[in-house]
Image 1 (spheres, helix red, strand yellow):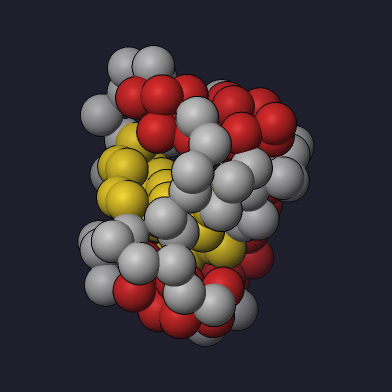
Image 2 (cartoon, helix red, strand yellow):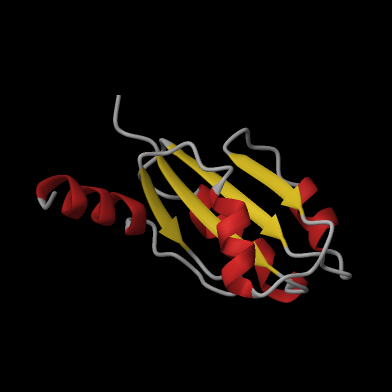
Length: 110
């Protein structure tokens, strides 16, 4: 089995883009992934959008307090179980081979 890759998304009030962002990650050609969505105390419909996904690879966590992006990423990183980590902004789209290409690169370039 290929090594698990964790994808970390820190999100704050980005309901406009989060659905497409997560969809692009769930559709990766590299399938052994976990997607950690760290909701940085959003007040929009982020939680509704994320909870509509039905995929065990997607993990949703909502912070009790809003923090700076760097702190949110540190808190979210404590949930990671993969050997490799990709950080994706919540308004980004990932091309379908993004994680595969990064996995190949890092496995060849220790």
